[in-house]
Length: 235
Image (tube, rainbow, N blue to C red; front, side):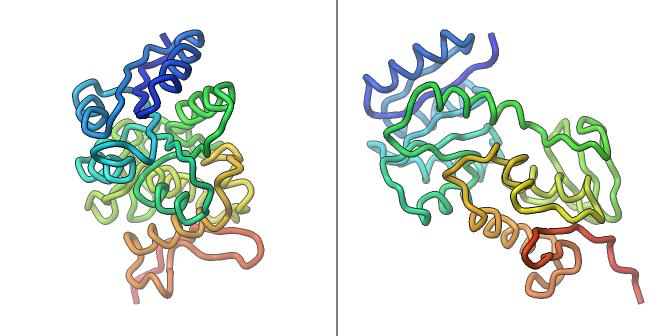
């Protein structure tokens, strides 16, 4: 088996279709048809990934995502929605979702997204082997725990923020283009725009910068992307 997938959607026919196709690809599947059941199974069953509908009876997908992340449950989440507005995509990703698929979609595409999300945990880098603990300035990356520490303090990061910060840290001093970052972090998901990346950068700055409005670590390279710079020396 490639992994265990929890599918949460109130459209039973769609759930059956998704689980059937995932099973053909070698995944074990769990089904839930409302938000309360979905959140309970996410906690009890500890799946490798959750496919989560945004609009559900009981708790909706955003509330479930928020609750899981508050409990430090970092299971990857792909959100499903019939909406097609960027604000919904940004909100879902801000709350810790890892990918976003708009209905209607092909099950083949969804299966590919599932494999892509599972494949990119954790972010790989040519500079330092991804599974090695790394000390970079005042930061320590512990990839086995999906944790990053700053000055010895554990940072409160969503999984997406963890992947983003790890990518920046392991490429310290390099300018990373926005397109490259989208490719690494979201496999060029057409639903994820550079605006979504900028939102995550802004949230990350709020957590690691002394002054997020005047960032010392994550520098914007206008028209290109971002660069993580050396920790400034003390005066």
